[in-house]
Amino acid sequence: MLVQHHPHPASAPPASDAPGRARDWAEIQERMLVPLYEAVYEHLEVGTGTRLLGLGCGSGLALLMAAARGAQVTGVDTDHARVDLARKRLLPESGGQDRPRCGETKLLYGGPAEAADPTRPAYNLITAFQPIGCTEGDSDGLAPALAAAVRLAERGSAVVLAGWGPPERCATSAVLRVAGRLTERLRTGATWRPALRDDLEEVAARAGLRPDGSGRVACPFGYADMDSAVRGLFSTGLFDPAVAASDQATVEKEVAEALHPHVRHDGTVWMPNVFRYLVARTP
Image 1 (cartoon, rainbow, N blue to C red):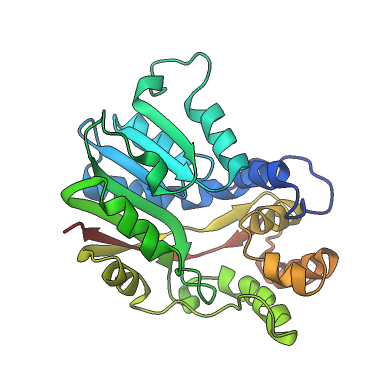
Image 2: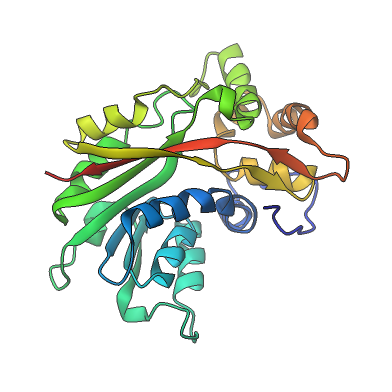
């Protein structure tokens, strides 16, 4: 699905412009993972009995989809700007029946500890939808966060992890290598690396979780034009180390060059990708 085009200036917002980056994430990039969210919720039969804790909930699209199925949702994220957008999305001042009721939804700054609430039943589903497996060390903080979240969940609850698929199945890998080349050139920052087959299982093991199934989902990245593609990709933060190693204009130029093979005759940008998810269980 192509995202709706929004007119933007030529350059993506810098990392220091948190609200601008968060808007680009919410308006352009976040929806690329909708097939992943849908597949997981269908697999786990998410519904009215689900009490979901979303780690790294971003601007709340995955939570909104779960709430539309009847789930009670709580989201935590360390990005204040994204959480602000999530609150506008899930906690509108007035909403229709297709919106979750305010008493059922919590959106919090911080990590799992912020989601502890002795007045509510324990969670029975934990999601960590931010894909890992494309830069060195991108899962380092995930295992401790999962271990903390597990203490808030019922025994045997499902925990969902997501990761990039094999690079040969992910057209975006070639674009992400741009960041790797620039950071490696100056030997600074996290570098790109291909996703490994057991990335998710290793994180689950470090968090004390028991694997209980997995799946692969096609999540093509589709953009209305080159400008939207650059802005969407920069909103992920994956190119920040490259910008720090050089400068934003240089990185944007190289990203645009890497995107050129994926520009279609009508000016849209289309990159097929496959993402993987792992379902694990709390002890």
